[in-house]
Image 1: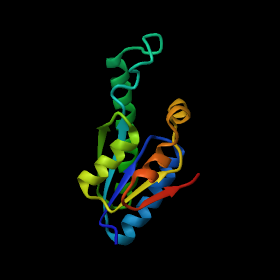
Image 2: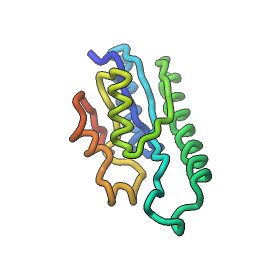
Image 3: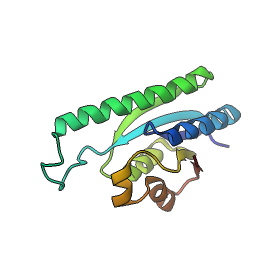
Amino acid sequence: MFNHILVPVDGSSTAGQAIDKALALAEAFKSAVTIIYVIDPYAFTGVGTDFSYGQAEYLSAANAEANEAIKTAKQAFEARGIAATGSVVEGHAIYRGILETAVSLNVDLIVMGSHGRHGLERLVLGSVTAQVLSHAHLPVLVVRE
């Protein structure tokens, strides 16, 4: 039923619970799994220099965090004998990065947590999960904490 599952992660506990659900689905359906972490390469555009500690430093920290979250997720899948690929995706809007990746990879299902760690962004832009749900043209499984 689900040949390819996309699992967006952000290192949060809710993303960890989404990984657990995606593991069960991937085992049941023998699905391919892709794990992504979306970063906004221009997160401080328009905020001003007082809030920014430098674009290069931000990107370095964001990529390090993303790679760690992907590595942790991949290890969970590999421990259960499921091959998973992972990548860092850049997108000005995180939900768009998720949906564009889903379309480009022709996934059948997105499995994601109900909320992540992005406090200020969530207040300003609304929940990434809510935006994915409102714009997706494929099934989305939302895992609540």
